[in-house]
Length: 228
Image (tube, rainbow, N blue to C red; front, side, top):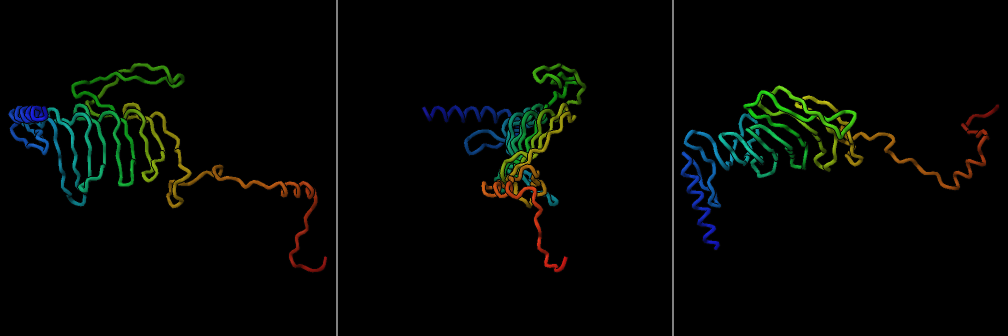
């Protein structure tokens, strides 16, 4: 049964390679980096970009449909560390995209892709007075990607949310309040804590009784002077 499955995979790979002008076979026997007879990228690809003019290189993997990125893509630095998880539709960013540093998640973006063949698109707009009510609005588009939804920014070392922004077709409509973490290191510029977050000292029972007995009395302070 295992041999049969392997044969089917190889047969499918040979069929796919027959549709490609250039391609390569991966270690699992699948067809990669296919360029079809029309010169368009198709199927699974692994793209490597070398360092250039001080810019670090990277590698990315995902699927092309008619020369346009489609579905989930992942980007790595040349050491193999994850840099990004992106989603595409019609070659444009679509849905939730996440970006990482070596320390962790740094940013989460929300995008809406528009079909290149459409001059107008219909979107749902939330009612400002009633969050459960939406209205459909027709807008003019240019067939690209728009910032649409909630964008979040994180402190990578801890994963705490620093701030969030809300976009409606590339226009910010609801700036988010900064949600600073109390555990951010004091050396960070973004780690300034509000004074109300600092715990107040609790007075003991003895101190309270002493203050009650001496309330109303003027305390004399000795400053070392002599005479009246």
